[in-house]
Length: 483
Picture 1: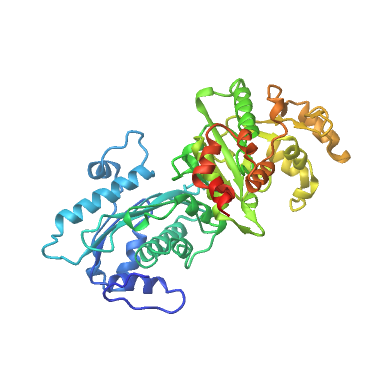
Picture 2: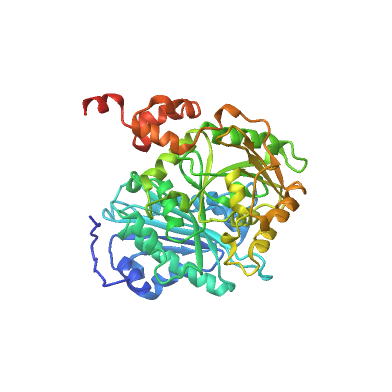
């Protein structure tokens, strides 16, 4: 049920920005502060313009000077100000101030909030489009512990003034959604784009926390960002929280493994371990600067045309239990994945894949939408500082297929040879031959049939987790016997 606050008034269809701000302003209990750094005071301006702001806004500020900012929020050791850590400091500091300065005795019904952002807009040379952190810390009942919504944005417009205006719209949508759609977080996400277009701003990270969002899984919210077209890729850490890809990938040697991981098998982990060992030995790779990414594409998450969220959660739990960082992407083609990584790092990268995946890369049908066809895609893929580590495939007759004897389309043969013999594709030779017959689909069928042999096909600990959490349709033996 939606919260009903004093002074509420429903609006038809999508409310205008003025209506949203006015609805907040006319609520006599909502009271808080705005702290905006780096792109003007565009959000609070919406509330001032709407009217009735004196009942809502306790303070609005912008500490642009770094020394002033440091004296208020504390010194940043890394010297960076557009960070999640800085935003959290701003939110906590401003909430403490309002709690200290506005007495609950005098205002027993007030519900406090702080909205903050720390942003860098497009630079003068227009080389960097800009990005920022935006968040709200708030309550919906007096004395209630505070909840938070924190998100990271990337600007897509090429004009600083337009970026400022876009930020003001987003901020207004966030505050409005926090109060009137907090119990429907998926809708709240979609409503962040009210009066905005996807080509204006990208949201690539969002985290909900606090008592209002105890039942919100940030991995599912992460999935919604990609599903709704708000970003092309999101990342979450083993602890389940969304993390900023730029922070994880910045200047790293990246090794990526794409798969369905449904479920993750011994083959997946052998591929990972063998390719990682080879990657570490590369001359242009710093073993202490490697980031391994397990990537699942959106197309891999679809079942019968729709994304099966329970299936997604099952895969996520398993990968997280193995301590892996997971990327959910909308990159069907590998070259798009490499381009994405190249935004954050120019260091050597690696892709670990099976024979079938490499054969697909040399299939022209995937590149018909490009004016330069497969040559344009390969220019984007293989002319980066990239290695492909190829895991072999076992044929039914017992023979092993690797980079030396795999077959691509006759028209692609010479192109394949060019990249193969220029060292872009290397074979994983140190592998466990006795596990090459393991396939995820076989495991799933065995789980469905109640055949316990599937447990031998998975990494240590994974089968226990599947049984404990009843993942992938697993049913305990005693349940099956009862039926």
